[in-house]
Length: 122
Image 1 (cartoon, one colour):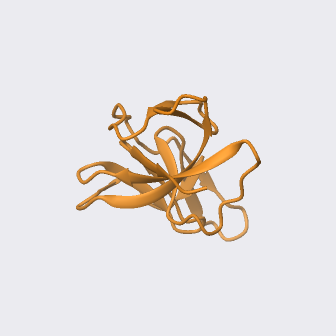
Image 2 (cartoon, one colour):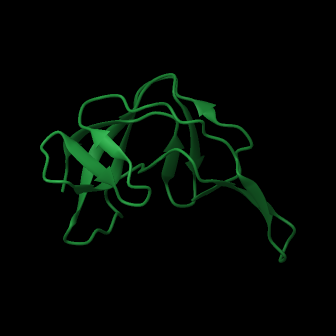
Image 3 (cartoon, rainbow, N blue to C red):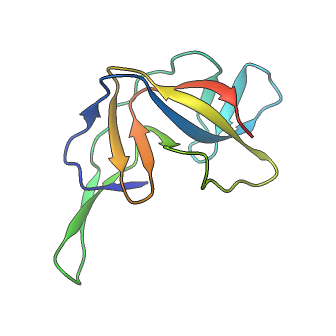
């Protein structure tokens, strides 16, 4: 789940480097996403997912709101603050130019319509 203030997704005007937490399935060409259990073929463009705002949440304190985005490929802008367990791995990825994406400025995460897993970092 990603919290954002963007009503609509942005379109990537260039490839965007990002990082993803995954599990290995002991196959050198595949990894599996941490939460949604998507199967990723390393180096290949994954199927396109429709990214959109799922719901709006209002805060009681000051009347502000944020938007929730669930569906899509979740990734991090940096690998510096990612904590993983012994079984998890961090992989460098690319959100390809032309993909739609939301950005969470608070947690430095993305949710995108497309992603390519490129190389293992940790």
